[in-house]
Length: 233
Image (cartoon, rainbow, N blue to C red; front, side, top):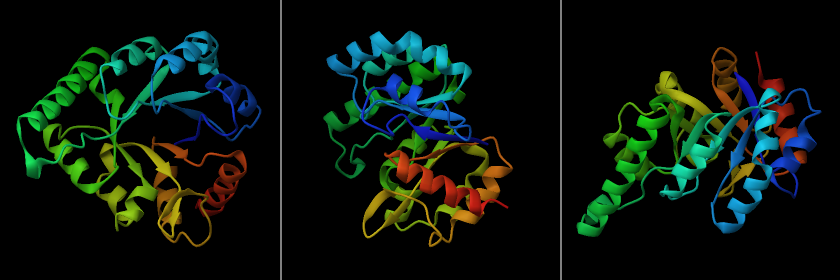
C-alpha cells in the first residue's frame, strides 16, 4: 500500500503543494489533479513540470486525467510519462438508452483514445474510476480487463457498500479514493462513524493499492489520516 494525497491541500499550484507536503513522512504519494488542461493549466504546468518530476524521488505519483477524456490527454500523458506511475480517468458518460449516431461517435472516439493511450504507454497504467453505476458498467463492457479505481464517496452516494464493492474487484483495484459521504455530500473527512473503513484499511494493508485520502484541505486530510491509522489492524 502507498498512502497518498491529492495535489490540492492548500491554495497554490501542483509544485507549491508538493513542496509544502514534502516534510510529512506519512505521505508516500501524490495524485496530480488535472480537472482541465486548458491554456492556463498548460502554461503553469510547463513551468513546473521539471521540478515536479524531480519530486518523483520523494513521491509516488498518479495523475487524474481531465474529464471528459479528450485528445489533450495524449499531450499530458506524453509529458508526464517518465515520472507518473498510474493514470486515472472517468468512464464514458454517453446514454446508451438513447443510442444515436452522435452518441455512437462519442463512444467510439472515447474507446479509440483509450486504446491509443494503453497501446502507447501500457495497458496496466490506466485505471478507470467508479463515478456512477451506468457509466462505469457501460465502459467496463468495452474494456473488461481495465484496472480500476474505487471511489468510496461516490459508491456511498450511489447506494453501494464500499468494502463489498472493493472486495468483489480486489485483483483489479489499483487506486482507492478514500473519503466519507454524508447528507448527500462527499469528499468529507473519514471518521469513527464510517463502519466500512476498518475492513478497507485491513485489505489495503495487505495490498499494493494506492490509497488516496481524497479531501482538499490539509486539516481534513490529516483528520482522515488519523481515522485511517486508527482503523488499521
